[in-house]
Amino acid sequence: MKTIGSGWTPTVTLAKLFEEQNQFFDALATYELIAQNDSSPAIREKIEALHARILNDPANRYDPRIEKLFTPEELAYLKILSHQGFDNMFRAVEKLNEGMQDSEIVFDEDEVLAEESELDTLDEVLREIEQQAQLNLINGSEGYADLTLSDLLIALLSRWDKKQPLSEISLSDMISLFVDLQSPQK
Image (cartoon, rainbow, N blue to C red; front, side, top):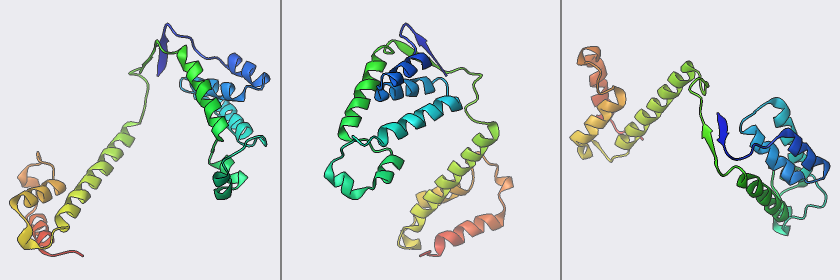
């Protein structure tokens, strides 16, 4: 993924300059924008270090209700900003995004977002979830008398693809489907 356009690109030099001037929110926002195009470990480390620096600042004053709910360690671990910190971060990101308004994000077709094996696994998991949801919908009905032809079709399609040849479906699998539909599962 690359950012192109007539806008400007945030740089590590700019982020370091913000850090040297103790403008930690501006530095963090700059590193976050850099991380959109460069997810190197060094950038991630800088972001984590700035998160820790901002969240562990003793000058942070939280709403008393927040301080009752969370310990200082939990506030830092969950990265909960104080109201002032949130406002500062929001303004810094907004200010840095102004220069990037005219930019557009371009995805390279060569860029690998996921491996082919991961896509197959994801597709299989999603199909199983859909099948289980459809079976749960059918199993949620009161009894066999409530089922309709529509429910039967949903059950058929939850087990087999609509383009699957009938010759590949065994009679025992078909009977198993009918038995599952007839027997209430509680």
